[in-house]
Image (cartoon, rainbow, N blue to C red; front, side, top):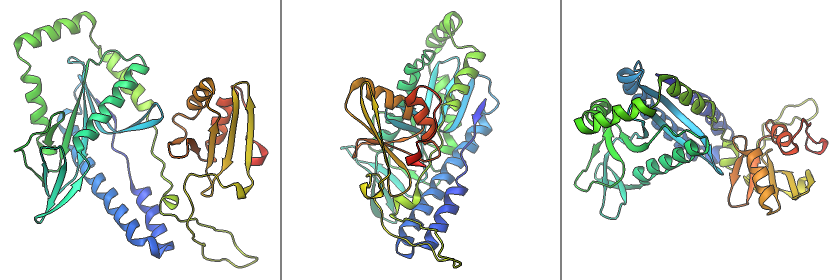
Length: 344
């Protein structure tokens, strides 16, 4: 059962192309970002195609592509998630679209080799394991006790090669076009005794098809699409204001991404029984939400911002867009409220 398809990245690419034309100095960095998005999307789409073709009609398997769920103060981004109803097992798949040779040394350092030249890369195994832990936290927080095991898998491009002389512990590394064969081998390799125990356990307190549909639906319902402020990332502030009767080209200048700017003079202070909440507009147009370090107030702000705002550890504040600010304020107030006049 396919609960969610892979996301479409065309809007992101279109926005980056627009910014590239506005900011020649940042054009090379923006072009690299576009290539990275296209490469990543290509790898995920290829993997999704193989997975859907082989398992899309299975009533025992839930399939979710491009899942982004909130956990604690952050988000978990899962490329592909498969949940088997009878085995009560979830596979978290991290996709890497490398076209070179992938290797790992005895220290756990990963390298991709292109034409004999090494390029260090973050550990895909560590990434997959982090997403597994995040999913386990989400399942626990939402009372989803049906899943007994969450396993990490790294999917690599069929065009890449993997140096397996040193096999890293943790996740399995599988080529995306071989994944269906690999997964069936995992199912068939559990042994008759283990299979019998699994069926007995399932019959007593296993996950029904309705449970699987409910779990898949709740995960997709918790999905929070990524919203990236590309202009802020590349230090571009677009001022589209026009002079009297004359249109002018947008002016571009570097701006900090997350630190409130007191010179803007747009700040709202909310006094609560547990302390103060300060809301201020930052230069890129978003709003910073900061609170005094009271445990109850921290929990209140976290609950209101989760899934709607981005946590910034460096400044110890939340960032939220103007569109979503009224939702956050309504939750903070615990009743229907409108946006403060100072923040309009």
